[in-house]
Length: 258
Length: 192
Image (cartoon, rainbow over all chains, first blue to last red; front, side, top):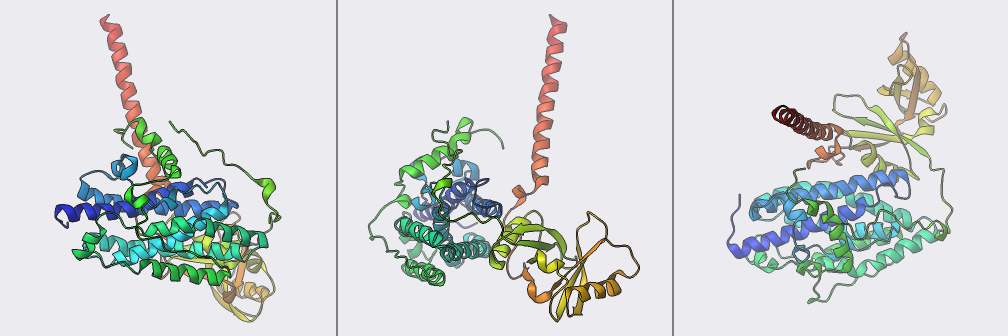
């Protein structure tokens, strides 16, 4: 088990929470499609991938739980709204528009893959080992969603318009995924993670490749350096609604055994 | 309390201009649990093309049990008597209601010829129900060793057996507490 000094430990906790919270809320939002996705096969596949997101969240909560001395469930469900560090794209309401769900998933999946790849080199060995495993699973999500974007963009004129519109709609929130959680610089200084100053460019390159493949033009701009949002615990109304829904059962009886 | 339930999604049937497609081609999926096992028919699905068929098959048929390899092909190809010169994968359904099981490969110029070769090489004088054949080229395969199908993170929540174990524990606990309640009720009756 790795040990950190207090400030570094808090920074490491923040980093893990930012990843796990992204995954938990994305999986939760996507699971809303269970039973009502446009075709049966997409319904089953999207639900299965949502389960993966929650499994990934769970694995990271377990890891951070060892630092926080708390159970994965309590960390996942028991915090106050501003202690959640997910980016608000994961909770942005899709209005049950399939193109929105695909756009949200597309941006997030590519970011998650990149993040796991980079954290596989972390000097925090437990985190690196976990991320190495998750990279392999995240590839499944990325391949799946790339093909969906391609499918919609090359389907009918209407499906192309819809997916392009959705990708534009989610572009702003996507850029906010790159806000770093509090203390991230400390992790770089301490050599726990490598500098990530080029992560937006790396991500942008990958999503642009897919836009080219699908024959659509989407502009995603980098956020302004001081823009604060979900990673700082400052959340949208969509997040609050999602959190209320997520915590509803847990709050009935936080001590219940599942 | 759930203040804003999302259980009633706003269906927008009238907004779509594109006609709904009800006739995607049907694909048959075969899965293999262990390297030494034969590929066995897992089920079918509808998908617009081979790419999406593979994506759907991975989630639909690759996650209910360990899966190390997957073959996906068009139902029409499995059943076709036509075809071209190729190596054919051949599958036998021994009894009605059984799953088709991969029995081997034959070189043939058509589905019909492949079926005849399959009978000669793999069936002999045994009873069987139906045979499916498919040119190797026409089939998509996913090798789970290189391209993960079954996940490495904890997937026990997907399995029915994990669920039933937990449910049984809960029932046992409920029955145990009911026994105690009944005992106490009887006990109170006797006492007063």
